[in-house]
Image (cartoon, rainbow, N blue to C red; front, side, top):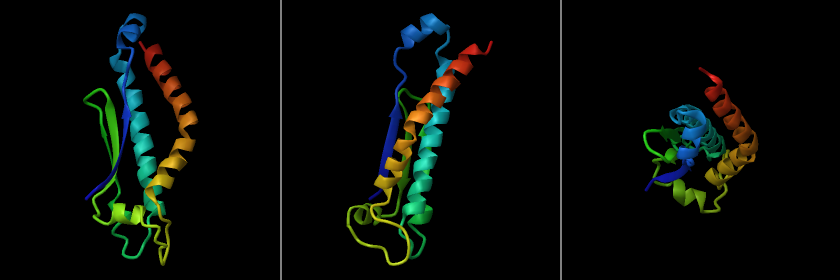
Length: 131
């Protein structure tokens, strides 16, 4: 049992972008950076939030970005079998951390989304201004 959250970014309007910019492949790098930042931030927040008794769960969070397909995906996961059980248990940790731990991590990062979207737009614009 693995606990996973996947974030997808699909580049749409390729034909319109192609007409306007002549090269849609330049959008891929800024979107990949965006997904990488977003997924690493969620994984780090999940680590911070994870209850710690042995540290095994806290150390298990990973972030992976796949950019070879459209939609590109970012996946944050923990392979610890008891992660989903704890996430939905309502159990109160003895030492540190909070439960649930992944959902608040996503919520925290989503609050940053507007600023991240503006930055993504600027990064794409900057990419197309390059010659």
